[in-house]
Structure formats: C-alpha cells, structure tokens
Amino acid sequence: MMDLYIYYKVRDADQTALHRAVAAMQAELVSAHGVAPQLKRRPHSSGDGIWTWMEVYPAVRDGFDAVLADAVQAHGLSALTAGPRHTEFFTDI
Image 1 (cartoon, rainbow, N blue to C red):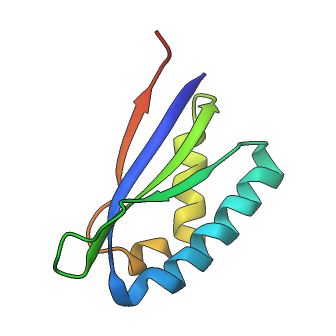
Image 2: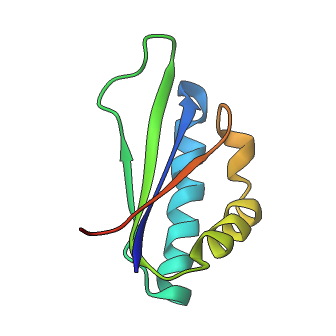
C-alpha cells in the first residue's frame, strides 16, 4: 500500500467549480474503491490569484493512479486547473 499525493494550481475563478467536481469524483472513488481521500489547499494564494491544491489518497493499491486518471478525465478536472497535475507516491518507513 502507498499514499498518493497530487498537487496542482487553480485560478481563483475556477475554485468553486473545481471543488464541486473533485468532491463528486472523490465520492465516487470512495463508493467504488473504498479509499479515504482528502482535499487540501495552501492557506494563501501565490499572490497572483493562483492557489495550490492537493488531493491525498492514503493507503491505495498498485494501479489506483490509473483509476484516478480515468476519474479525473470523466469529471473534466483538467479544464479547471492551471497547468498539469503532479503525482507522487510515498510509503511508510
């Protein structure tokens, strides 16, 4: 099992729509895959109306990143982010 972290930039104007889309996507992932997702945001914008958001998926199995990529596409998240989504895996020591 690994923890999956995804961070990306979001414009002020897209925050509400993105929040709805991510919430819907994560609800489906909970139901279908039993994950316990989290959605986080830096406490302050970078000063130019751009925020950094992070999705966290603790204790996921191998291959979950492909499931997540399909869900991201199905929910149109890429149209609401300012640039790419960055994905990183971490494991317990």
